Length: 384
Ligand SMILES: NC(=O)c1ccc[n+]([C@@H]2O[C@H](COP(=O)([O-])OP(=O)(O)OC[C@H]3O[C@@H](n4cnc5c(N)ncnc54)[C@H](OP(=O)(O)O)[C@@H]3O)[C@@H](O)[C@H]2O)c1
Image 1: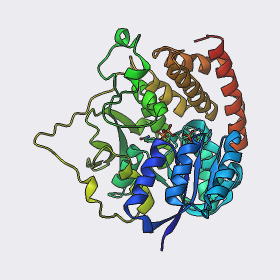
Image 2: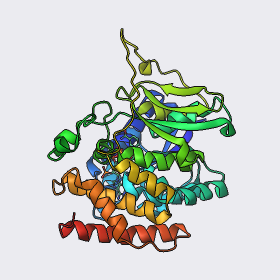
Image 3: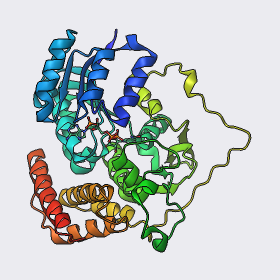
């Protein structure tokens, strides 16, 4: 029987890749809901093709136009307000909104879904312990979509959790691999968005270039797999063929390899525990495949160590890390903040902002909003 699926962030890079997976075997999934942020034009195109049961958009100003379109179009798709959509039940919910905006849809969908296919790593960084608790309470399983965690999930099937010695996350190194501080002082947005191996949304592409993406992934891995930070390692692997590895206590290292196409981990997250026959994803070794694994340059790319520090720290540390990074990356993309100021700004916000006691998801949301306002004010004032 077709499984029901909701997609948050259907208009983004991951959302579009998920719809591409659906195109391969349309009969396997019944699309319950698609949700966009702002891009109503693309949402309309997706509604016309996929005819989901419900559609919604986050941007209030576009709601009336979406409702009008649904009436005019005459399909069976119904409008549902964004906040109400979390309560619609589906077998699988793909969480693929970018940044901290993904936290509420992710968290509030947990009681109403059997499986959370998780791409939005920021929600795990902000609230990993609360998300895990909520999943346990409602019997919801998380299957990671992030390619590294998806690779670890696959590799974990080779042993027991108590037999794991370490997780080894691979990183492409981004467009600035091998560059030093001097060269990074003047890099442009265009150069930064020119990722060598992956085609992704702009925020994650900048995060890849600063190595913050890997830092966020270290925290995500800690919460997904319950492994101590000391046992989560990072290796630079410029070829992006090995998507990550698990080292077991007997010395065996199990990895997952494959094409650099997010359709692959999305497909795994939708079909797990089954695998389907998709010849289009066959891996071509070519005539000469060379795989390298290097140590990250932590002096130049300071964000990685900042993330380890905050991961080992408090929830408040992680919220400031994630929020300050988000605001700094936006400012960089708007060409207001130089590339190297991103980690400096995060460090300054970590020094400046006091942490309250955080014991619930409401506390996380409240403190995240507060930090967001402070960071926006600081950037507006040119304090970076
Ligand atoms: N792209 C990848 O290959 C990749 C790989 C691993 C993990 N991830 C993770 O997956 C998530 C999505 O990344 P992406 O690259 O797909 O990002 P993206 O291309 O920028 O797409 C972001 C999606 O989020 C929606 N959105 C933005 N703000 C929103 C808001 N306030 N409320 C509701 N929806 C909102 C956007 O809607 P509109 O476009 O309609 O405004 C869009 O659908 C991120 O957490 C990222 O770290 C991505």
